[in-house]
Every structure is written in C-alpha cells, then in structure tokens.
Length: 274
Image 1: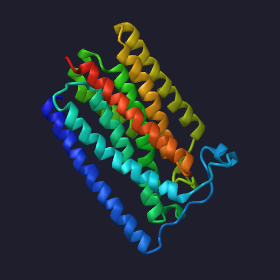
Image 2 (image 1 turned 135 degrees about the horizontal axis):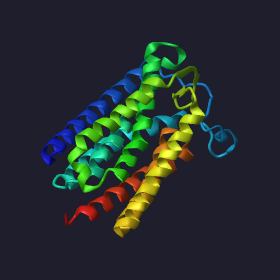
Image 3 (image 1 turned 180 degrees about the vertical axis):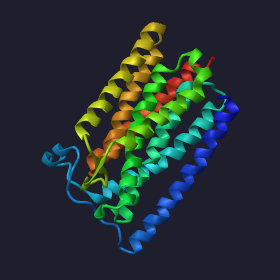
Image 4 (image 1 turned 90 degrees about the vertical axis):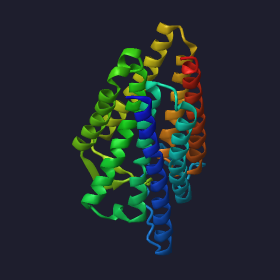
C-alpha cells in the first residue's frame, strides 16, 4: 500500500466518521423530540457492577460514551493525517482498523434510539452482528500491528489488511446472537459469550507478548512502551464500550485517550528517522 493510497483511505474514513457523527446527532435530536429513546432492561455486563455501590447504572453516562467514541474517531483520523502523512508504517494502517471498530458501536446507538431492543427483528440481529464484528476487529488490529510490522510484511499489507477484516466478518457471521438478552448498554448478547470473552482475552495477551518479544529481539524500548500503551488503550476502550455508569465513563475515557496518545507518540518516535 503506497503512502498516497493509504492517506486517501484515511481521508475517506475521516469524512465518513464526520458524516456518521452528524447522522447520529440528528437521530438523537429526532428521537429525543419524539420521546422514542428507550432504555434497555437492567442486564449489566459485567454482572459484578451490580455489587459496586458507586457504579450505579445511568443512561446519561451511556449516551455520553457514544458521543466520546464518535468524537474520538475523526479526531484520531485527523491526527494520522497531520502527523503520519509521510510515514510508512504498518502500525498506523492497522490502527485504522481499530478506529473502524469504534465506529461500529453506533449500531448500539441505533438500537437505543429506534427501540430495536424491544423486537426480535432481523435489524436487531444485524445491529448485534455489526457490534460483534467491531469488537472482534479491535483486538485483532493490534495483534496484527504486533506480529505483522516487519519490513518484509509491508509488501503484503493489502493482503494482510483484507485477511484481518475477513476474519472479523466470518467470526461475526457464524456466532449466533441471543436477542432475548439485551444488556443495559443496548448490546445484543452473543451465544457462547464466555468462550468469546476468553478468545478476546487470549488475543489481548498474545498482542502484549508479541510487542514485548519484538522489543527484546530488536533491543527497542519503544516496543515495550507500545505494549503498555496498548494495555491502557484496550482497557479504556473495553470500559467505554461497556459503560452504563460514570465510573466506567471516566476511567474508560481517560484510558482510551492516554493510551492512544502514548501509542501514536511512540510509533512516531520509532519511525521519526526512518
């Protein structure tokens, strides 16, 4: 993938994220005026939140979390154009996969504003599949950044990027959705949820270990910093997409932005003299 092609790709998604933000804002205004925003039942995931007195469920925190994600994506696309326009790096390309994953959370917003969670419609199932696709794509994007960042892999960047999306699409397509269980965050729960969460955790651990191994092999502290940055970023992202309270909202927002800043900072430092 040439720099020109990559930068054009990022600009297209910057525009797409801004259009999505505008559409979601318009939908929110319309739904608010029509009083059609319906809060899902009190099924909290993770369930231990029910036992934390200062983490009470709050629909305002949930709505703010959508706003933060929808603002975060175009901001990051802008930063990629501003600071990495002339930098040829695999990590940035795979980071766009994570940003696209964040955009898929808007499907939960639709579920809320259109009251889809009250139905068993195909649209509800499709919204659940979109979110599952995104939450599979997010950790896989960082895993690919960790294991496919070698110079020789850059010749196959388009192929690797297509494989990344294909794996996430196939995974979302084959996993059944349980439309009878809608979480308090408007999430359509998946079948085999425990297995899926274990798989995500293993991908997360593999990603961290891969960055650490790269750092040891190349004697580079930057890869060690990338590992810690990804840990903070993914933890913040996980809290924010699971947010139905102000505790997760605050911690998730801080983790997402601090982790992103550190991740982009050390990538820029690694390739500054390349």
